[in-house]
Length: 382
Image 1 (cartoon, rainbow, N blue to C red):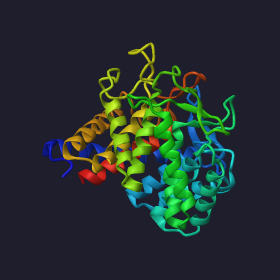
Image 2: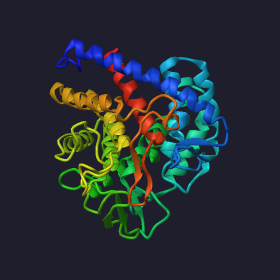
Image 3: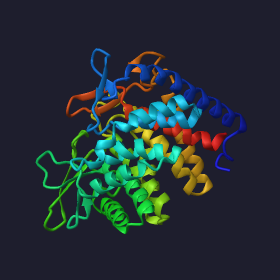
Image 4: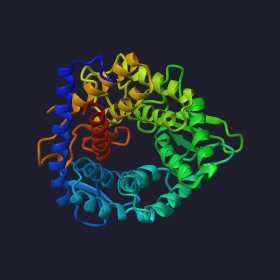
């Protein structure tokens, strides 16, 4: 139904492409699994010499590799991937008590959450619930938002990335029937709409709040070009987060927010022809600016989901744009040859140009959302 406006031939072409790329992910991550057999580390990126950079579990990216392993198990049904996923997920267990980060959705829900979804292993439940409680410990009842960072000179910083943790809290609410999880998720999303978004539906990266009044006092960037610019990955985090909010609540204001964000991104005058965003939509050196494949992959996954919540015309538009992203990411311009790129799939992501960190490199979360987008597309076109 969603693809009525796309020709049967093109649909078949897309189906073939999706299957080819998932098979390629299997072969590339078979090599990755041999490179990260150390049961204390998770892969993150590569260094300037092309060597694999791995991290311990307190790193915010640590849950993406086990999440990828679960996705490959979901695709293949092969217990080898399940066993690898179980082993690497177990590394994350102690993070259930980590109250010094807002990134527990990435760290635990991508790993333990996918594991629970695919296996029903009830031993994962207490870890996930404890992690959700740890996340909620960062909520301030004057500000009515979850604090993002404990570093920097801000009084109470909240970053747009934090929208990605709210799916975890909805899961915790459904599992426990504790309305506290629900209230925090709703308040965080509502205040993000109120304070993070500009009139054109672009978002600031960081909003800092006064903890006594609960009012925003500063709207800035940390990883974007400037305080008034649109940092690409942040825009994608917001699109993904508000699409999820509509799924979980069926509240039309979240659907409107997601669709307005999608409009801003899809029709942005500085979006490159191949649909892979520059690292910031306002980068001064466009068209020579670095691209961010991670922002593209997150956007594609979000658009595939958003397409199922709207009318046929908009749905076709979202799917067309997501398909264009997937085709670009699956081309030699972004997809690494087998055995190269530290065994990551995607080249040309950006961590933080202002911090001179992880510029034009593979990033584990780019691969995670690329594979997720492929799986979501596969459910539609199969």
